[in-house]
Length: 245
Image (cartoon, rainbow, N blue to C red):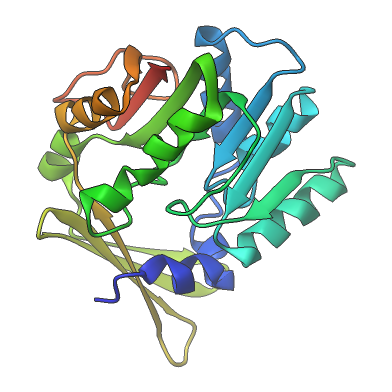
């Protein structure tokens, strides 16, 4: 399996087709949860890490926050810019790798949402952005971390699913391999198949909290879904953590 699978997959036009069901309503629910638990002034600086096509960033900018976003995928950044322009919104976007982000600006809130974590093959790489972001944050600043719940996923993994999207057949095969959840995506349209892979390192809540606390963060809240239900290790699909510097 290609270690840097995300370079091809996230730059593929088919990525947005496969995940088109993840809409701005999901983004709004998560941002509502954030702002129910974080108090920010309108001129506060926000960084959306691995922002993808800018679903959250568009809403933040529309609300009047001084928000910035970055992603490695130029395709997703262009999509975000286009979507924002259709709403007469101008986004502050730049291209960067989570492992190598250099900024002089200080932020009041850093967002790491939608399982934009665990892509890499070492703990050092996976937690490197948290270390970097600690330096980006003002004292008292908040880091919001949105990830899958390892224990729930291991119990409820669906080995294979199939769906039709705009005339294309999408088959998704999932397995656990070397403490990673690996998904093979096969897309066909009455012709040659296109195959992509997603691979995310699995971490327990304890491991994540321990690593963030080593950096200097303090856990302030935990939730198990975008509605704000408290985290339950057995039953929560998501692991949403709020850390303070």
